[in-house]
Image (tube, rainbow, N blue to C red; front, side, top):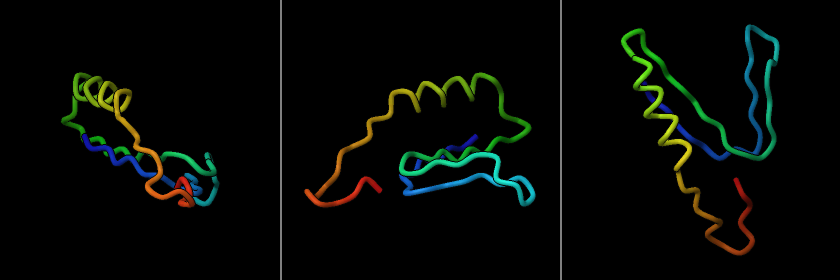
Length: 65
């Protein structure tokens, strides 16, 4: 099980050609799950995500994304 956390200015999720979810500026999580993954793997990742520290902007005029 792998997760990538990414800042985005916009993102959407398509199933076939239909958009089933979308966000503007924010955080997007890409999650990869394998048949061999167990509930304990998911529990560990949820705890890790909930405690992640997102650092602020580096420069005064830099946008969130």
